[in-house]
Each structure stands twice: as C-alpha cells, then as structure tokens.
Amino acid sequence: RSSARLARPVHLAVYLLGVALVMAPWALRNAVVYGGRPVLLTPMGGEVFWIGNNAQASGGAFAEGRPGVSVFEVAPEAFRRDIQGRDELGQSQRFTQEALWYLWYHPRETLHLFMRKLWTFIWFSPQTGALYPASYLFLYKRYYGVVLTLAVIDVLLSLTITETGRKAAHATVLAFIASVALLQAVFYVEIRHRWGIEPLVIIFSTGTVAWLLSHVQKARAMSSNVKTRLA
Image 1: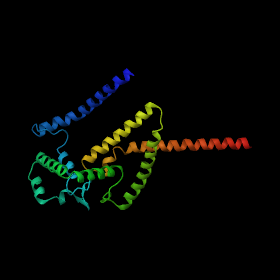
Image 2: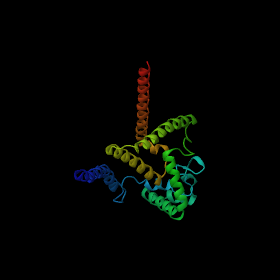
Image 3: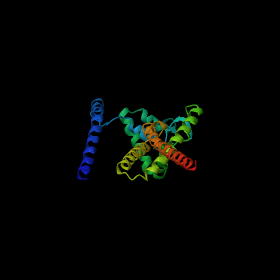
C-alpha cells in the first residue's frame, strides 16, 4: 500500500514533466516572436474565449439564431473596429477583456451558455451541420446515438465492478473525458472538439457489446443443457 501511495505522485510528476516538455518549445518560440510578452501556446486564446462568452454567442462558432454567420460578424461595429486596429496580442487581450466583462455582468446568461456548451459536447446543438448536407448529420447522429447509448450502459454496468483495478481504470477515463468537456465549455464548442475523446466513447460502447454477447452465450448454453436433459 505504501509503495502504491508513493507511486501516484511519481506518476503525476512524470506526467506533468511530459506536458512541460511538449509545451516548452512553443513557449520559447512565442517568447522570441512576441518579444518576451507572455504567450504560452497561442495568441488565439482570447478570441476563442470571447466567441463562447458574449451577448451574441450561441455556445458554438456561429452567432445565436444565425447558422453559418460568425459571432464576430454580428458584434457591435465599434468593437470590430477596435479589434481590427490592434496587433495580434492586442486583439487577444481585447477579446479577453470583453469576455470577462460579459461573465462578470451576466452571470446567469454565462451559466446558461456553459450548460448549452456542455450539452453540445455530449450531443449536438441546433446549429450543428449548418454548413453540410443534411444527410451527413442524419447518418452521424444515428451512429453517435447508438455508440453513446451503449457507452452510457457500460458506465452504469461499471458501477457493479468489484475489482479495484478495473473500477479505477473506468474512473480515470471518465474523469479525463469530463475534464476535456468542462474545459472546452469554458470557450466554445463544436462537434469537432469532441472527436479527440470519441474513440474512448467507442471503447466504452464495446464493453456493453461484450456484456450482451456473454449473456447471449450463457442463454444459449443453458438452452442447450435443457434440451439435452429433456432428450
């Protein structure tokens, strides 16, 4: 037990070190390009934060009630002129200021948007597929609906798992999926933003398929035994 407790912080430290090693080259590059001004990964952070948090926001890339029209296109003209008159970092800072102002003065609307973004990450939004043929969305919704249903069943089945290792594995993957969803909902959400974790959802769905197949095999074996006894 003591060795297991010691291993956890060591694993966490190794993970954080790996993250730092991946991010360091970008941070150093940005420090050189932007003259030492703090830009960790991308100067686009302010804009993507604003897209999901402003009076015209729908939670996605398009403006509320305007499928196919970007949020920036319907923003107040004075704001757009202000943005266009700044350099890249200045734009990011202005976007961030405007988004924070909206969060501070419109907490109820912000919470509502946040929940809408979470729902979009899990399922779909009314604007999903606005730029694609309806048949594409129809097929994708059917496929994803089946996969998600099977995955949810597997999660419910995992609650009955008694083996500590398997239960911990399930909890870890679920926590990772939840963290991605929550973090993305701080900004704005489109279906493409969940594609990185969708393979994990598929893996969960296969657990339900395996569970169903095992029960079918057991039922067949019982039926065969009954027939043998009656013969």
